[in-house]
Length: 426
Ligand code: HAM
Image (tube, rainbow, N blue to C red; front, side, top):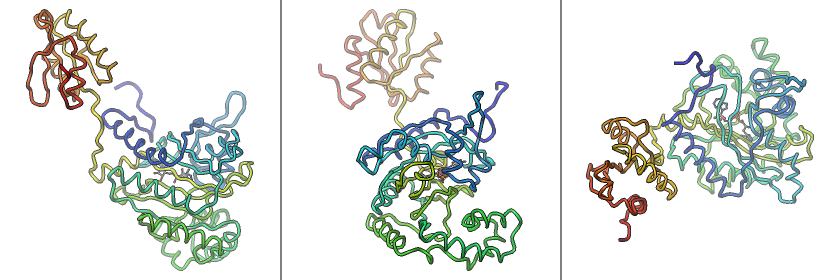
């Protein structure tokens, strides 16, 4: 123990668990790379206003959960609570949308910060892999993204992820619905904070988890019944494309997302093995966000999947990802001369692409063999003075326990061949 521990709501990623995290990130990114998405990386902090305007003044994320700071120069910054506003800002700043190739398709992987009440699956520092398709209005694009996320979960071996789907309408039909919902909500028996929310962000009230609120919401007007013709048709096309692709979904007319920029298609992936923090990923269309942050009209759609919660979902389902062995060959020198020779062998192996490690620290033969076993290596290379005098090393198969001398000359090639399944050419 040191004097310090990681701050509340954060945790360290350490081996061996960290390998699962990398594998999850990779599994989510792989389908995106195959689908025309290019990698984007943006700063960990941005101007506060990007998020207050973009994510929305009435959201919990902006009002309660942002880590903000004022620099010595007087600039107000916020640690990024999400990726969409930043990615769109970056695309606009670099004029990617003017290059004439819309949509601009980008993917990202990073850590995000929200000052939330920590609990299982909810952290103040967490990881997302996300994708944004900027500058096109096409139901096939919405469907593409949903399919890529569903395929990523499937590739990971998860079977308990459910997709909830909704449409939040557009600037045409949402205002009338909002007014109808406000009328309904004003007639309910609600606490002061919730009453205030009716005036600022009535849709969020639908998302209130408290049973006494939920009970009163039976009979609340639903946006599905107020969608304009074009939103209705758009949503129907998305649903058809998902069905044709074999992606199962549940229509959830009460699905409201925690960010204000959404229009039309919205969705969430949930996993029932995670307790209250069941959302493993979410996203939707954000046709008005570009204008909100000072850009031209650029209808867009995207999602972000939570890496931490996806790892928890794997654990809940008992799925072990095949993670590549860190070490294939472990060298155990017996004596000084062997130490020099085997260190050279390890370097050569690594240069030949074989994962190799070495018994450092001059420990006993017994302790070194223990380290070899613990490393997960397939072979131990053991050598003492007598072996070297004969120009050989002992190669021990750590699975079978079999051991036999192998010529030092050409050892790296021989081991590489054994590891890839064949024997080296004589
Ligand atoms: P979000 O729903 O706020 O959406 O976050 C996406 C995912 O990040 C969640 O489903 C969850 O798995 C994970 N997540 C969020 N907060 C936490 C937390 N405190 N601890 C652990 N995991 C968390 C967005 O962030 C949007 N930018 C998604 C998007 C992209 N919409 C359009 N494009």
